[in-house]
Length: 515
Image (cartoon, rainbow, N blue to C red):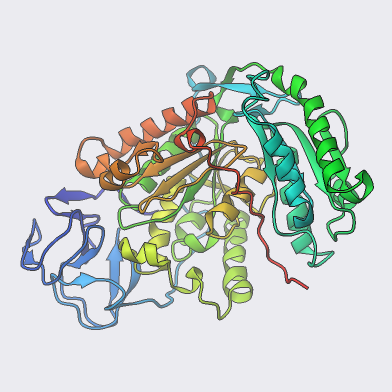
């Protein structure tokens, strides 16, 4: 488990652990500046969020942050020197998975003490946080049609249905020119079915072209979807083409709107909350403020019986042993390791992707040198509780507490899998300032630092930079995030919803070849 309680903020720097051989610059540090509490002088211009060596680090020795290895000195590094890609090397090192050795069950609160929110209870007992009608395309060839149908339902035309949050199209670039059998097609259909069944969709229309590989009938059969009052289907080649299919689609949505509008919110326990955890545009403060604060909120949620989905498999690489050790069983831990090995040994061999070391230019500018350092912070979103299950991409999430879902690190693809698995809210941390929405679920944006929060306040819901500023503790911020989750799940609109984001973030994972 990554220790986060040994943190010390002194003037211009942050010491994260007494065993670390680096500190993190809290603000820009100039050459010749005295490093508070460390007895050294800066030998570099160090931007905020970057690392400064506090002792001599010999070439080949590990660099430690939170007492976790994040790389190795490429050259001899003297105290006061900035530590980054220019003098730190990325290489593999052995990790002891010690499966389930640190497992401790969650101490659930009594039912009478559990938090509640105002949710929408569906006929089958599932609970929604929003109330949309969704239109899915089976293939890129029907993407324009589903978008045109959704565009018809302007706010003015929906004014008569105040309890409907909107009509949203879920189009994508797949569905043909791909393998007809096997995991690529199964994954696409599993993702589409996850959305078609999602509690936040009161009604669904699926539109196919007719000759694509992802045949509508095959989708319905494989995923046991059945047409009915809540689920309509159209095939363009059978409906008379583009214009007539749009007209038929508009009529189908018109038929579903009155029923969709007949919903009321009622008090439900927080155990119905399923939160997808995301981070994007990470920086050197992600592991210090927003990610551990979100982790604190996840720990609270788990005690109230709720569920959180940690994902982005490449972004736990290097610290996956901190999860396997607290897995509920050896089987769960080994399943996580199996997914890591698939990424390393099969999916990304020889590719210039982050699991093989390199992170994005924005991450590097923000102070993150490699994937080990990024993973250190990314994994903290999952809190400190036990890992209860590991799921394939877009599989239904049924376990309570912390669950891991295998996804890429690319946020739209990762969040799409989480939502297909049942997430009814997304919590998204960012240091550089990612702009993101996730229809049909609300998305909360958590800023790692105050400067970015103030610059992008229209997009950011919570300023976790207050932890650095000394105006809020990490645990208090976790409580604030948890309470905001409940408010948002109850219908309070997030910043991304107010801006209308979320129409373009349905991006199923494309893992197969195109032909």
